[in-house]
Length: 185
Image 1 (tube, rainbow, N blue to C red):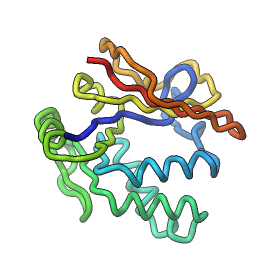
Image 2: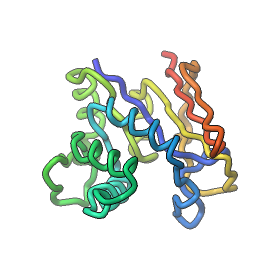
Image 3: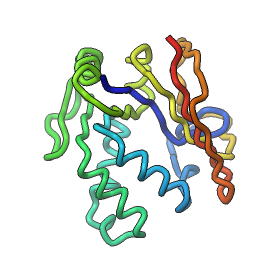
Image 4: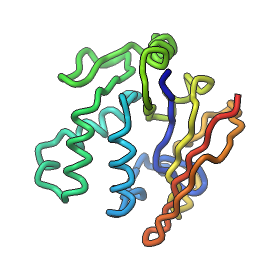
């Protein structure tokens, strides 16, 4: 059975983007990016809401990524090789390597994927995660030493997760902290 994990880069006060919609506060250093590459390599599929899908596709499928920093180029290669599923009602089609599922079908599709997949299903996007919060098995935030004071929250409003710490790692140079929690049922 697959493990549904929800993780993103977030500010210390729990936001994935600032009040203007920017994620510019969360640029990883090489050490952190290498850790993300290992995590991505172990991912069976990326599950995205529309907005995060657009950001990820625009950036990581761009030909410029191939000539980028070697750590970024490695992530781009891993990203393109990993199945990507976007949950959207407004998209009409997606490129090869991606699959489109209507948002109304998210719960059923994610339950099917969990039943049929061995490995990690990485969900990204706070709205998508909130719509299936009770299916999340693991929460994996990368905490940044930044307080934004507002923006788009990482954690779904009105949903409680009781968590058990399974792993933590501090990236000393940047001050970022990776946390992996198991959701207690």
